[in-house]
Image 1 (tube, rainbow, N blue to C red):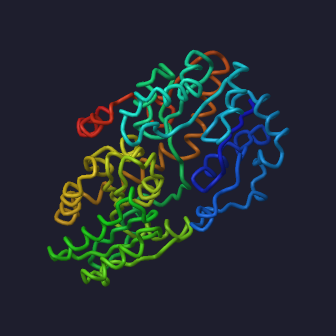
Image 2: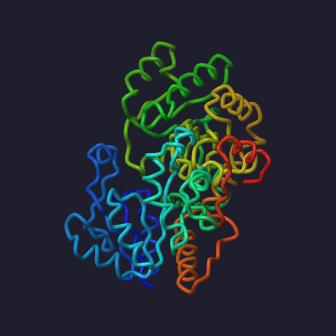
Amino acid sequence: MTFTFVSNYINHHQIPLCEALYRKLGEAYTFIQTMPMEEERIAMGWGVDLDKLPYVLCLYEAEYDCLKKIAESDVVLFGWTGREDIVTSRLATGKITLRVSERLYREGQWKAVSPRGLIAKYGEHIKYRRQNVCMLCAGAYTASDFHLIGAYPGKMFRWGYFTSLRTYDSDKVETMKIQDGRLHIVWAGRLIPLKHPEYVVRLAEALRDRGYAFYIHMLGGGELEPEIKQEAERLGLSQYIRFYGYRAPEQVRDVMEKCHIHLFTSDELEGWGAVVNEGMNSGCVEVVNAQVGAAPYLIRHGENGLVYPKNQYEKMEELVFMLFDHWKEYQKLGRAAYETIRDTWNAEHAAGELLRFSEGLLHGDIAPAKTGPLSVAEPVRPGRMYRAMMEGTI
């Protein structure tokens, strides 16, 4: 089987899956990059030396070879490409095609009533609902959005991002954490409005005022960085928070490994949130907004992490207080989080399921996995998702 993955550019969130596919398929696997990476992403440490990745072709350097590869491959997986013309050309052939997408209507499903928007979605998705194309949902809210417009009926499956896997001895997950009498909290991401870094400063003030022993590691930069730093200084929190600025992905992971709690405060505009994978892999106890696309797929509330509803800071704060008050009881969630990534939501497992699923499609059979990647993606309405998580039905 020849398999080609086409997306805007390769980065550290995609390389683990690509490497796993390349190990399994060799030269039968290709990643096609459709555009150069933005300078902002490179400055964040996302840059990749393409010469070291033998399976990568660049559409903007060798368009003929890339288009030939897309046309002739047995299976093609399309992410966001910025080149819908190459997707429709493939779909017109009737050959097996997979698409991967985050949610369509991050700002609200009311946008689905837009006639102009529906015309665009018809051309990109609805038109091909009966053809040999399936949707891999990179986020738990994706299926509901596509279900709303009648696309991919019975052909939507769970997917996501698969970050670099670190493995540890089972008894090391808790012992590798900093042991200084404090609980260490890590927050990582761009300091921009949708990620709500202001919650971290607000939480630090509340933890200090309650007399808890804690320290916060805040990694990342962005437009809100000066404002957040100034607020922390104004509130006298400098001794409780360290601002690292941008760090390379591996350095972020090194910090996560030593921390007890990973706080992820992004809102519904966060399609997936790969740092959740990284925090879980690092054995952190996750406290995550349920609106983040990764949360319903990765986290089982009270078993391998904790989620709070919508953008409700107060609920998030309550969960963190609970962890501080009952740490011995809840620290086991970190080990369970690690096991979730080690056993199921990792690149090696996902690649195996993807190839198994694709082989089935080539023989006219749709065979979803029972759990994890490539299992059926239920179209749960966004307003119902948190309750579904609490009830354990998602």
